[in-house]
Length: 196
Image (cartoon, rainbow, N blue to C red; front, side, top):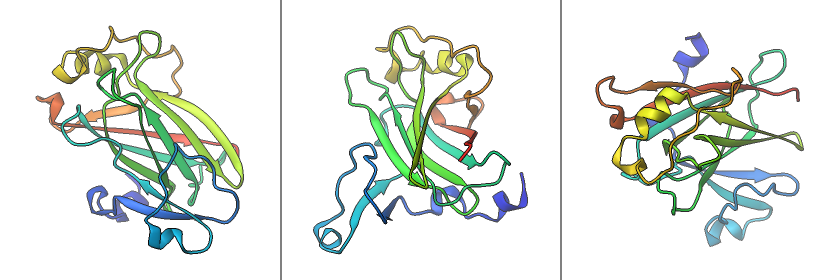
């Protein structure tokens, strides 16, 4: 772990809700709800962006940490990263949220391990907004982790899990918080490189 990672505040001490001011037209980030009336009265477009995507107790808790880098592996602060995922329960609506990357290029989300479809493996759809440009992609989870999660009660109504694509890129690194109890939570990390 580099110095810049150790110097950052612990993940759980950061504010769960931030307000973003966009200088131009606001990108449609996962149908964000407007800020409270007092903030909406202020000039400019303002939206509340939550980093907590799922309520507690809806699945396996997971902290997702994504680092956004440019083509030369330099962090990209101030980029808006949006993620969208299936809820653990197949009939529940999708979960989504957005964060602005910090000075070291990190965006963090508190969520649950995603559900999956019969034709699509567990993962996140990711959209990056930077300097008026938009990049999209998908991050997947290792088949071994998805297979273990599939045996837990919150995920039993999902179809049999599919393995992720045979590409090494886009597979998240997942570490359990307690190696003996997967339901205690997971930490998922990945670095995303953009050519912007």
